[in-house]
Length: 153
Image (cartoon, rainbow, N blue to C red; front, side):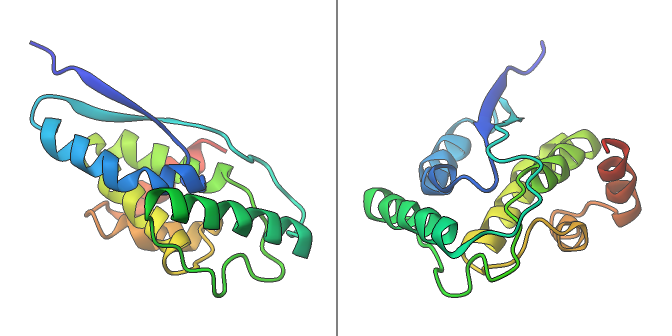
């Protein structure tokens, strides 16, 4: 019998997805032996090319504060989206898809590390080399990751 799929519609740079992470973790822990988790990437802000303005940053951080207040999720506001940051969600989404293609059972661990890097560590997850670094955490071979990541461009 084929294992059912739990389709998780998500976006690595979506603050509400980060806010939902603790709840989803409970769902995953409860049902992970019964279903396979598969991602559908949301496409929040793909293809961005312009650095964020101070107004855009303030607007986004306002949303982060609201999500934190509503969900209890921890955000690191210091250093988030620094000057010159380009808010392009396509790059980390493509990285998560690459991991899903290489090793579907490791996609959640990878997704979680990417989100934590963005929301807790204020890292720029729109940089391919940063994303490669996270691939090692769930045990994805760097060359396989690079090949899959760049095949979608």
